[in-house]
Length: 228
Image (cartoon, rainbow, N blue to C red; front, side):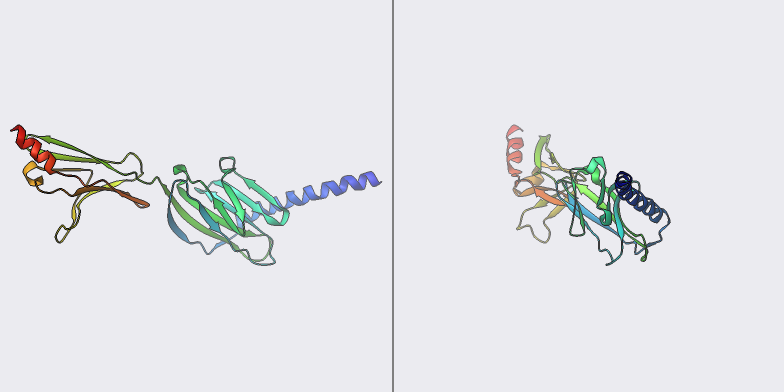
């Protein structure tokens, strides 16, 4: 008789976990979603992003983080200490003080994240959505100069960075505006560059900005005039 009771006592917690998961699946598929809010966040590769949640006191709940509407990054049922983390995020997800942290961000982490809070009884489900865009910071750009037949071509490039845009400026003092033009390539006549020593190229994206060293265009102008 004691042996049978022992078997039953081991069986009950397993059934308890199973029932909670069944209820969770029901809540996930049938619960009404309230308080949906969308926002966009731009982060650098290697940084961490946090997803805070605020459970209503005295209610049994579950929380999950879903990537691009289908991939369950993490599922947390605190009442039964059930934690399930997707294999792709195993070493990069932490839950502490009602915050889910996704660490060491990668470019492939860009996308939509839904933070879902569901309750087994009482309050209705809640969802927060984040559009996360992970970008690689730009590196300091380099400039090459090509002088041919009186024409001057400046080309700017950055070896690192995602969604990079380029612009050209003249360092102060430069009158009413230091901005020259957008784009990685700038062309002009050599004579137009003579006496203008402070051109710089700026590479930037939404998370970073770097500028090249000031460029002395007189060098090109003197070389060309000396060859003609």
